[in-house]
Length: 512
Image (cartoon, rainbow, N blue to C red; front, side, top):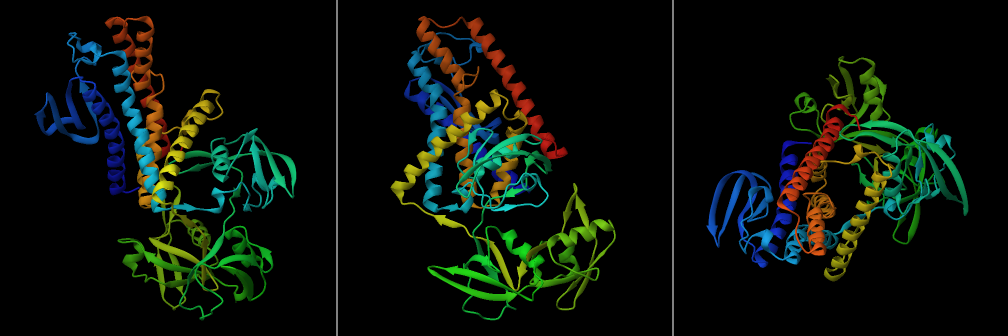
């Protein structure tokens, strides 16, 4: 997570908060409530001007903004002037309080709609609950789960795609799970005990050793591979040595187990199917070298193939790390196919092995295999429908998580606060515009729903109080309003500190 990513994340989140406050501002103006200040950002004023009885300013901290309405805060005193917030009819106050979340929801629809127009990546795992790969020796394998099995439910909860499976398992480490799956048309009940694993920046997560199915395609062909019309970029791999390919690991496993000098691939291109033979050789190629890294300083060139480590043939990325961990602090000798040799000292960062700044790719017989991803685009009208549909599905997800929190189906430690959200957003920046649009839409809709919850000081809490005032025919006394406000602020600070503490623990100690 680099500095520029953090800055972009703060600006993006600030924009989401700004849109929220803009909703309150527009509604207040339309309701003829006096807005004393509308600020972009917080803290001391940088620049500003007065117009129409409102001070417009840009403040020093560009994180969102705020709206200050006359008579909004009971603790600051209410004069009873007709243009004060407290003097406005209940319906208008509800309109003002609800406009912030509504603007966030509208922003979510707009952003998701743009995303669907640009195009959304569709993977096989987005459309199925089928298991593509099972790691030998892990809980799923030990419990009898096999590639090709389809999950129906976990702990009685129906799953629609592999994300549903992944989320439930990852938020339930060290837990016995009842899984209903479909195998060869028959339903089976299997019990699996999940394990826990610490992931940097996330914390403790559950895992059982399964991966989703993957359409494997030819993603690159090295210059050393002989020209062959039967092998082209984008070809889908259907089988290897007659065995079905459900995951990239199927190819790597078959290579490691194969004793022959060639492997046989059945490829699909459009409506045609053809078979090719390629060398059964794994090659680790340097496709890029990070700037100012140890590898760059040593002069390691791009497009070189690593042949051996300390004189031992290399078969996978893991060979480099395994050799490094045998003798920490000692230089490792990398010999390349060209005959060049380099000695590099292994680096470890928070128990993670750093590959000297080398960006590596695993080529098999001169071919780089990767996951096939379809980019699905929608026209202008259809995209708006999909954007609205996605926004409503996020609402369902939020309430599902809230329900799970209330009934203690998941731990509060998996809920992120501002620090965690900035970290996640900064990471998503690397994925490009599509990933950034998705996270902005997702957070904006989340903010809308959380603000509408009946929590004191939140918009939903204010709407609840205004509704009670309408039923009672009179407002609560200023003393009671101040008490509710202070309790709400205290509760908000407590929750903020608790969630932020979880974020800090995840980032700095690996705990969940």
